[in-house]
Length: 377
Image (tube, rainbow, N blue to C red):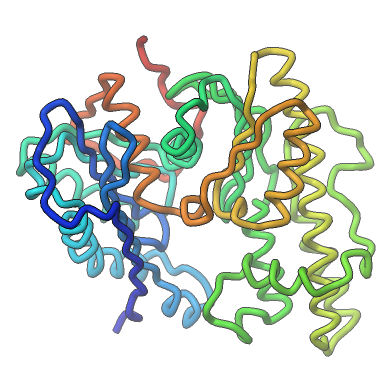
């Protein structure tokens, strides 16, 4: 049997059914790219009518990681319920009240993407709704525009998550210049691996690895272990990242100090976090230099799951302000995967006239931002 999912519900506060307004568009977004089953409804006025997320924490803890086939089965079980609840909370009178269905078509885990995409195609086809395929990374980059309406293109994006670590110059919807990527591991993956090395997930099954490392780091000495910032000695002029060496150094320190007491774990977590974030800071400063020399950027957007980390937010805010930019962070619940970001990315594309053909639409497990097509103005 699959582990029971944890469901979180949010709504805009509408208690009665919303009277359909022909001048307002409504988009439902479906997100199933990894382990969260998420659905949300937004309107073209920038209101979030509903959002529902079903997490798979119990199953992830049981199997000590995400098993794509099991995650897809959980999506299949949870998605109908999440869809029903999101529509109920939205106040709209059924799917036919919607203008379009948006769905994450990639990047992500193939079996998981397939669940969401299949459901979206079926809903759009049965209800004769417009259909928009959304890039998961673009959704992360665009969700701040829902909340901060003066966030105009171009702007610099630092996207940091369990699967991605990238710096991007966002010029327009569908138009992105990738300035730097990780050459090996993402920062989010590194945080999760460190949590397992320190056995933090075994001690606390209520939070993900990255959050546990952050919690332990708050109580530790960040200078106790002399980790070396990646790529620092070579004085690289690009904006790429590397976290594999930092993970290797952590393995060495853990083996040298076994068995680990709580204080040592806290010091290791703090020292690792300090160095991992320093690497983000160094590469982001370089990206700011490049972007300001080529485009009139005013904002630095920091998004993705790792952007929920309080120390990441603090230090990247300092970087932005030092560079004369306005720092933009989504609320913590919109940093991790969610349906709102997919619905809003779909809305942005919908309002720009994008309509995708659901017939024959395929998911794309690998779909870099620079492979998106620029929109016609």
